[in-house]
Image 1 (cartoon, rainbow, N blue to C red):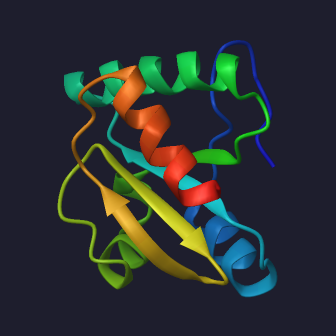
Image 2 (image 1 turned 90 degrees about the vertical axis):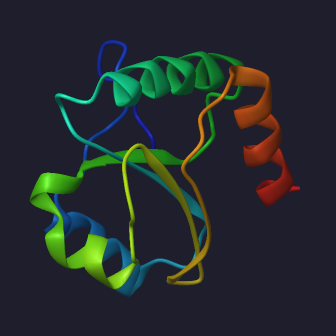
Length: 112
């Protein structure tokens, strides 16, 4: 699922995300961002730290500017946004990225 490309999280297009949603049954976390969002950059750095701690955590990212249909269907209200997708549906969303420990606890509460 997640692959390191240098120090980045794998980026999916809207088409790739929709295809995965139609076919997959395993849990994945989708990180929505925009490239000019400073808070998004900070959140992505936190995700990189978390992936260093838990390298098998299934996280992908999507530029919300190129995913309008998914953003509308999943009712993404703002960025940054983490979406927990399981069994082809959104189980929960997170908009506040306060610190690494809090985010790690959020991921673990959804995967334990």
